[in-house]
Length: 497
Image (cartoon, rainbow, N blue to C red; front, side):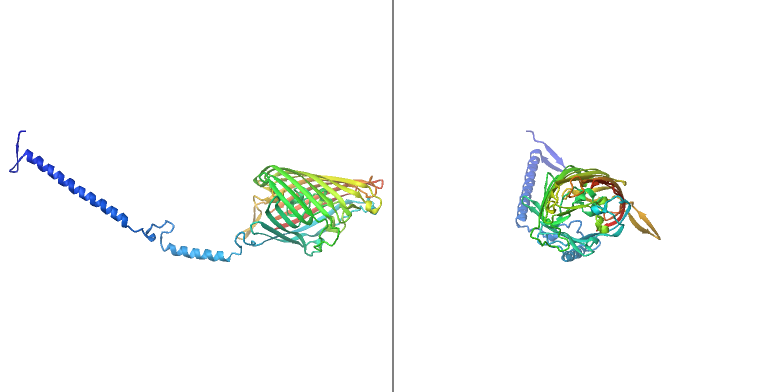
């Protein structure tokens, strides 16, 4: 290799010396870098092995807790203390360890009934079939009730009524204990309760009747409440309901207990199926049947003509007596169909009653007798978006869902009305065919009733009613024909809370 000489600023270097110098310089730089990298790795390992956990108070605070314009933590402490104080004041016991706070409720009905155009001139008063109803104004119902739940599987209801037919003295109504999740029986009630011997309209309870009272035909020989044990089972997503009960046959009345060696028995069952059900019953198709067997402790039975379903004896003290007779065993079976599509609803109820050995215990009897009857009812809400709710658990109607409740409000110096409430129109036809004399099987009679109603629901708790009924009886008694008739106008204010 040929050596060259380079002169820079008076210094002379040979090319081999320059290469050697550069090579040594690079080795020194690499060595220093290696030492620094080794020291950095060692320091990092030492730091990780000896590092302490970061104190909790140094962790970042959530945005909602970060101080903003003051000490937010102090404010939160005050709020927590306030919540604890409110929880300490609660009277409800922990779930599963006691009874909840009872809920108070009740209702008040004031009714007026006017009996008009009564055609009773041709009616034989000696037959015991004479009905001359009188006008009436008074308290139909005044009741207080208390309900509650407890221990995760119990519920109860205690209701007492103050009404004219009890001379305004308190008497028991619904008084029962409910037990849930019972093996094979599901839900059991023990106490004083309704006998489900009718369809959905009958099992509503008076707070939810379409008319002021239940349709008259299904009210014939109506048992009302009895002391007993019942069971309710639900199947197929609650679309199928099976109910049965065993009751004492006597009315408890005002004494609240039985005093009789022959107390009788009532067996009752009801089956309903709802293949169509949605929106709390806004769309509903339901059908079902019911059956009752009564071995009565009291052999005398009394049939009533109740125009519009009104218990005229409740108002006048003189029942629409279609005859009384002796029969200590009878059965009742019926079918029901309900169809509701929004504001419109149609329902019907047909039934048979079979009486064993009518009047045999009193001498001249007429053997076994069968009566039958039924009704058809249609109703329509005149206001939009209003409908009547239906409960699959109780298989009965509930309150009206009022879209625009009626209100009276004060705006400045003026009192104004807001909302129109819910307006409902209804019509029904009912009939009841029975024997007219317990001593002559040829004596028969048929009672026809046509009714109309206009209901105004201010809200779910206040209802105003106007009812009109025409009542006509076609009877053959003692080889004579009688056609008594009457027109009845009823008005009512009903408050439920």
